[in-house]
Image 1: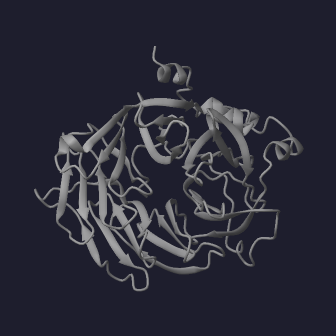
Image 2: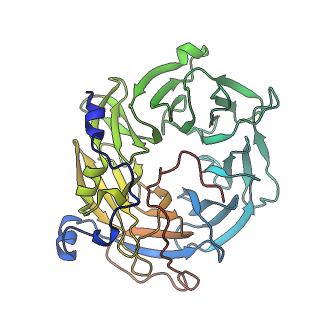
Length: 411
């Protein structure tokens, strides 16, 4: 039995029948505060609307203090990152939005991708009509996107698709032209669940898939076979990946992979081997929770140079859930910060989150349609009027994490 198979052994297959009335923390509040020594407070909290909407994805432009949230009604909700004051809301697609990104060079420009097979560019100062659209129309068939990304110097755009009949595609565009620059169809055999460019190397790309593979590409190579540099077999369905940093000791880049079973794997890219595996049970233990079945991994965050990456994780048990950050240090998960909102608890399943490595600020949003802003420091009152239209709901929906479904939510 392989290391990854051994780490996954003993998973609970059906968590619907778990007695959540027995869930909660393993220790009291005083002990938790001793363990989680980095204080955070909720500085702002708002609902995105009066109707029931999911927040599917979040991205932030930290310098200009803008936040974009992709919602389950195919719209984009724009606010400030600090007070959550609304800027605008507009319909971006006719079908599910699979991700949203700010242009890293032009802060008033955002990109949205959709299962309608298009990636669109919007000027948020006048978002009535998209300014550019990227799609593949080579055979008049829609290739539904599941993920997309733009590189750090705003020259390349990549989109990964669902499997359509027998084919799964990675498309590349020069951002200046709607014509497909390259199309790779041999590297994955199933849905491409996530793609991400390296944060500082504009021609390095990673993709992960429900076929259990994580691939790393050098886009300087023109030949398709030469472009693939590394292929990592996680032996489980991959939901999301994150470049988490350069190890000054090993001189290697690392990638974190979040799986559909709420495990997190840290891979040494060039060695093509897993450095660490954090199972759902290990995550629950680090969170100090009684029931691992209600715990879920949300996002891995890249931090500053030479610093340990962070894992945002939590539990969505009604009325007694939690949202916390763990430090991934030398193969261990260490308590780092508690994100606690007295106004609404933390029972919503978080779908989108962003982290500012310069300030430590975190924003999160989820299935109750609520955005929270979390700031490092001692507790302060919530921003004025931020909770006037917020209702906390307790539902009987099936419990699951941020990767409980292979396809994005469609209302």
